[in-house]
Structure formats: structure tokens, C-alpha cells
Image 1 (spheres, rainbow, N blue to C red):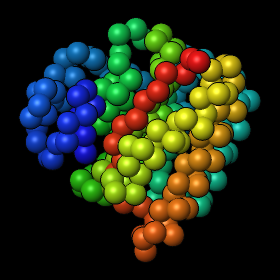
Image 2 (cartoon, rainbow, N blue to C red):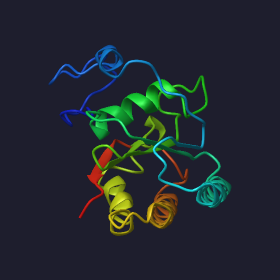
Image 3 (cartoon, rainbow, N blue to C red):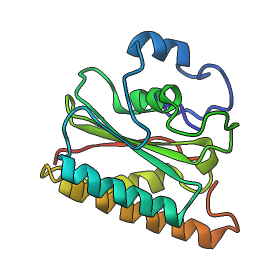
Image 4 (cartoon, rainbow, N blue to C red):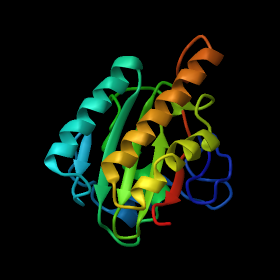
Length: 191
């Protein structure tokens, strides 16, 4: 796992040994956990109601192919929320994954859009580490950037889901178990 701020490798330490980032620090910085749903929270209005329905169907297809994978989509419009640490904090505090999962068993992903600074991040649970590394997560996001930069958020997200499915399929071919956590990746969504 890497620190979401400085990208230094960290183990199960309560704080990053390089920059000192910790969950209590992020709690203080980001405050109260926002209201959210498990699948799609679109408070910034990136998707219409019809698009949310289509996206939900595609998330269910992903889950049908990879039952241990859960992807949640979250959008906000909050300035001064760096995508990597904010996505990491949301992922850990909002419990988009099943409660009670032990380290190394969480196969959830969080796709975070922040309209205020035009960024997106993809955060993965520890159970994906070794299968989807940071390079793979960046490839997954990069597949969507052309559409996202044109404000075609559903199209971009569906491209991202297709790339995620492809990466998971490749991982399944490499190992007996299809899934094992992923670090955080982020890219600007403007060209």
C-alpha cells in the first residue's frame, strides 16, 4: 500500500512514516462523513437519473462477473479536497465495502469525482493489492479521460468499467483467485 499523500510505501502503520499522514489527521481535515449510498452517490450531478440507472445496471454486471468486487461511484463538488487523500478517507470512513472485512479481504473500489477541482480518483481495498497495482488503476482511469474531458461522464465511466473488467480478467488468468487491493490512482479529467 502507498500513502495517498506522498506515495511512500506503508504497511499497517497508523501513520505514514514519510509524511505522517494518518486517519485522525484526515478526519480532522475532512470532518463529518457525507451522506452516501453503497453504489452511486451523485451529489454533484454528474449523471442524470436515466444515466444512474444505466450505470447501476453496469455495476451489477461487473458484480455478476466478479462477485467479490464492489465498485461504488461517488461525486462531490467540494473545493480543497485533493482526490487521493479524500478518496482514501471516503473509502475507509464510508464503508463502501462489507463491514467486518479484515485487512487483505476487501475487494471494493471507490470511483470519486470532484467537480470543484475537476479530478477523479480510484481507490481500492487491500484485497486487490497485487492484482491491480497503481499502473493498472491509472490505465483504468486513462481509458475514461477522453470522454470525461468532454463532460460525457456516463460514457467515460462505462469505458472505465470495460477497462476494469479487462484488467480483472487478465488478473484472473494470471492467478487462481481472480482478486487479491489496489492503491489509489488519480488523474485530472480536463484535457
